[in-house]
Length: 188
Image (cartoon, rainbow, N blue to C red):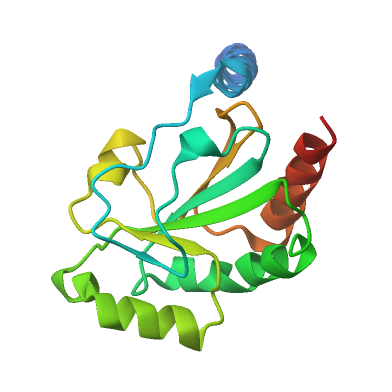
């Protein structure tokens, strides 16, 4: 009986050690993969087939060289997107005088009811979202950017390269990380 218990304890110890080692190596692989993806130079796709522009004349990313551009995909019916509105307003305020900064929201509807231009304009106005908004009713930009989430935020550097991507709500930590990255890119 005692030998069986010792054998079982030793087996559990070995299995646990193997699991822990595998887990640590897999976390290292994931971290390396994320770092590689973040460092890969990917040019930001040009805005295409925009149904309408709100708060702005049409924006071409090719004309924004020398600017740091925040491109965020959202839809006005998404609660996670709505939770990001205060962060977008904070960036609007913080970088209001910064000529080398531009924020563009790409409104890609999730549901049929979110295609209505007047509703998008009204929601943007009611929430004081004054940045340029590309209405992406045909999902052309969603597909060009290979986007998969609402909200999703891309940070494009002065040469047009996507340098950082944030999937989902920013929350406090995400906002701090993205703001620090914007500040760093503005200094480059």
